[in-house]
Figure (cartoon, rainbow, N blue to C red):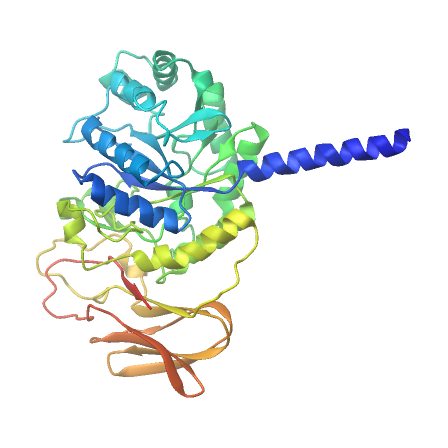
Length: 454
């Protein structure tokens, strides 16, 4: 009898651990730049779209305090319902817009602490930051003598660190000892780390062709050893052209601070899909998509619903194909099982001029753009085998695709880009790009990706 009771007790404990683990896992956030004065109705549309794709919360990022804009998005979330959550990502850097004060950061923590849409994790209010580990910033813009003292002071003013679950982006080199050193520097002040560059665009081979999960593994190992959470940050793309920095020493030396660069050969949806597969294999409890709406750096997954000027600048370059195909991987990550494909879909990806053109109005090329491939890509999501025909200009190639998800590519040509799906010789679905590829009359380099789907 005692043996049976012991077995039942062990089974009960295993069940409780399993349930706790399941409840703790599978949250997906999106990094949201809080810089547009959009209406509550526009914000509701964004929230509804994100929620429909499996995203649980927006991380509201700003380096200046904009309470009216924060109020609007919290109101929008409340009107949509209480399931979608929000939390702040305090942006700890100074630019022409200004910078946050410790009082601003404290208000980010306290203003919505009782709001029904405020994210809580493991019983605590969730909070992140973008940067904030640099002592010099705190010394320059606050009365604190170090970053550690600054965060301790802010949390004290906000009611005590014990009430917050803090997972910041504090930069490291991505090595095991580098991550461990950062954790040990801040110790109980942080509850985890997110990596940004080393997870979003992890190209470490000399030609920047293959995204790696090596630094994810270093983060995961160090975080696990110190009882911290690791939150990876997948991203679909990055292309930035702030031309006054293109010829700077940072860009010429391929410094990460270069404001005029691409970060690797993304290969259409290749970076996005590869990173999701790698992250699914790591099985972290949290993931933050980088980004929902950074229009300037072309890392967005949202369609440009915003009325901001930056959104209008990329209105023709929707990235919703990333979001749509990403839903499959978000569901896979959350459930631990790859979803069954129930509908055929085609997703088309390309940038709109060759990497070899010379832009007439730009002084210098974008750093690393020579590593890109002048290809057009189609991702086929199929219920059963079919032929996929990819056409670039006047040239077509046919690929035999099996059921599931596969990506095909070919060298692009000037002109119209399109793809079609055939079974039994009949076209089942087809998609055409809304922008043609041209290498003539290029005034500025633009390696933002165009995508569309059917």
